[in-house]
Amino acid sequence: MLTKNCGKKNSAISKEEKHNIRARLLSSSIDEAQPQLAVQNAVIVGKVVRLEYPLEWPKVFTDITAIVRQASDATSNGRTDEQASLRLTRSLSILLHVVKELATGRLSRTKSSLQSVTPEILKVLGDVYIRHVQVWQNLLGQPSAPAERTQQMMTISLSALKIMRRLIVAGYEFPNRATEVNQAWTLLREHVWVFFNADSEVAAASVEINGLLRKHVVNIGKVFLDVIAHHQAAFALLPGTLELLGRYWEVVVAHGETLAAQSKSTAHDINGASTGSNDVAEDEAERVRQKFREKVALQGMLLFRGAVKMIHSPIATFKCRSKASGTGGPKTDFRGQKTVSRSRRRKSRLQPCCSRNSSFRPRSSRIVWKFWLQNTSP
Image 1 (cartoon, rainbow, N blue to C red):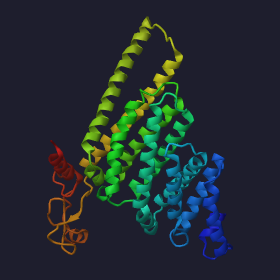
Image 2: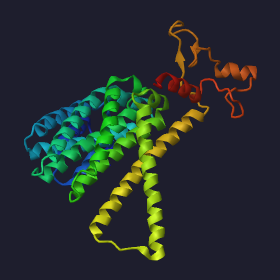
Image 3: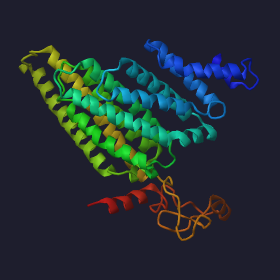
């Protein structure tokens, strides 16, 4: 009811009451101790922001990022500040729901509003993510470090990662052209394998820490999958794409070999040569670890599926203008040749040359990837 009334121009709530409600929403939500109530508050804030931003609530992102900066400075300096950690966790939860609401909006005004504030928010979140990853990596190297603080730091970095994922996909029309996206992409491309290899090094008794570490790997993989699903050209042009695909393929091959070995051992057990399990806990931990590696291998296969689909799909991936023609000149395709508009093609009754039966497909992603592979190969 609150969100519906806030969205109506002639609602029963006056402007002064709306202003008081908006002012209380953030202050009451970031200090909420109960997780269930905090989630509901974050959902309400997201709904209100979708209706009120940017006309009625233009400073909402400024206020949220200010809280995030202040709380992040207090939690990442090595001291244990429970109040600052709570405020940072709640503010990141609010920001996540706000970005979700704006990212799912179909109106051009909603998308442009999100894209206008994305660069600044991504820089703040990148700083939060890097700081807290460094903190919990140092804590993992200390055997006497408290597990609760390590889990708290990992939860914060995971929340920042989830928001960064949605901002990279929905906050940019051309992610590869943004400097902050290239920096975040390079960092995530390195972290995914550091965390993946660290999974076997963390003590098996730390079930929660292992779970959070695996969630980092899976969510970074979701960043790659979302980019290749919504920004195919940007995925090809972002740094280190070939190396990233190669590393994922190694995981796929290793998981295939594991499955082959398991099938052989299963056949051996069926024949009556099983010796039985000595430790049920170790079997359970190994089962969870294999399930995690299976999920990462599946993400790798989905990445290859997206790349192959982009290569062989006749969809026009690149449309650019030649530098010589300027902004007002004729449009050119990826090879610099003039493109024919849809109206001219319809008038002339020409057969589209990008049909499935034709081997020549101008402006298709197949040509783009072929050119890209030739120029990026060593």
